[in-house]
Image (cartoon, rainbow, N blue to C red; front, side, top):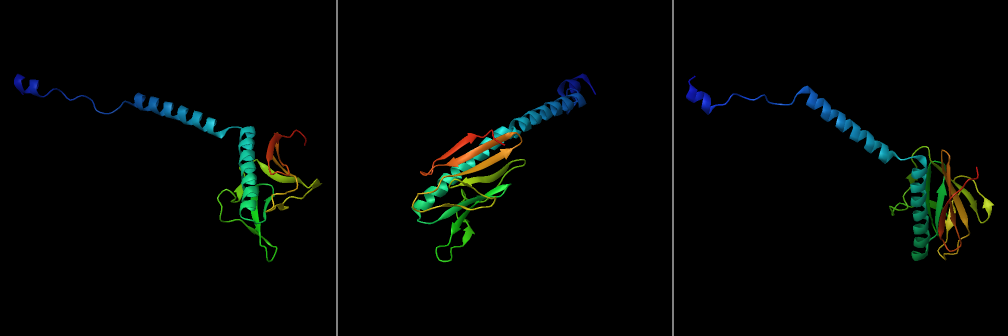
Length: 170
């Protein structure tokens, strides 16, 4: 090849990345993924507070829906989930609410649990359905959401306002 041909075609440069460059990129991606996973995981307190607010909103929605649609609804909790119910006016039987995404059954992420605490001033068992009347005049009730060292109480007053408070009692 003469000097003219060499000037037209420069020597090929190495293509691709070196092993060190690839390893550096992988380390950066691993660190970013670890930081994102840690930030999204949160702790039991944050998770419990988020689920308590979600449940409180669903309870208020159910109470308002009971009044607007003139139907008796109910809420129950059995440890790892809560569920909303509709009472059939003819048979008096409870059936799960299936036509409302807000009132769909909600399974809690472990290690969170939820249980009814009291209704109309009396303690109640897990799974008890707490009624929400169409008149809007409901007896006070409370549920407790717990996870690890965290306990949060959701209490409803006769005006269907839900108060979410940390509960230190075991």
